[in-house]
Picture 1: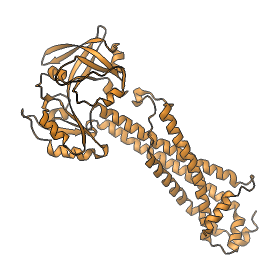
Picture 2: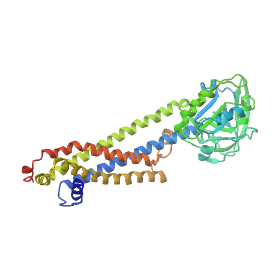
Picture 3: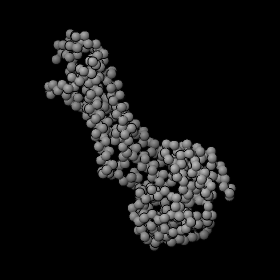
Picture 4: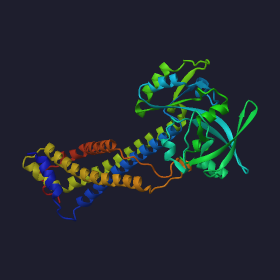
Length: 415
């Protein structure tokens, strides 16, 4: 029989006198562990949700890897590169690639009778993955994009629509400048999207690939580049290395050089900002572990002092210091376990409430999302629980040595 575990169970189950000092101490320790664990679970959930939501929005406007003209990838101007079937096949055969789509960009101006706005026209074809934009449509519909013909339909953002007072189905003129010449097109607004990612919402307009290619004066097999989506984001670098070795520095039939860049390289400021959130999480985790640890230490010391007479009796009948210390450590495990159970229920409950109702709102112009994003990640929650239990028990080892300084003769007269 495990004597320390048996004694710990009896002590924990003994309700005793409600006036004992240890009762509120145990409650405070349990609440401290519960609140600390709940805060840690919610913090990790919010940071994961926020990072993945913003990352997916950035990828939704671009891709995991962009392959294009060396001058385009490393600059702001648009230079054509041949994206024919053979090159597309090379990209599709790269390890970890899930989808490849061509695109062409063209700067222009949308103009109404009352106002105008500079935009970036993004031409896509029938292979364009519309999942992201379709999920963020707020008005109208997505047209059938094509590389073969121009439908003269565009999809604008809510930010643009509000500024120019536009609605879906409305006609609008667009002007494009190329080598001193001005080209005018009349488009129909097929739909309006809203992602709250301002840096994209204020400039990206979607249309047919054929329209953007013609406005640039390029040949049918030329484009700004190709967007490559990978199967697993964690394997992004492996696919990027393949592109560097097999695609970069090769040339097309016009002599232009291919180059590639990852989403991290294209938008370093955004991913550096998201990376700083990890530091905030570690700080919160550290503070909450300290809160749980200090409440447990104070609770254990109070319990030891209150049970001094019992400790003296155990020593008098031959119990070793190690056995008594293990008894109180097991007792602390019961308290921590109860606190962790309450913390798990509280933390997961808050996450599910926010996930289903979007109760806590945010300013989308500042945070890029309208509600606090959360992500319930069970493996992380399990790791947090294990770490909380181990660290909380570890910090109690030193205070438990107070038992070795209690002498049986004096402790049995202790009140």
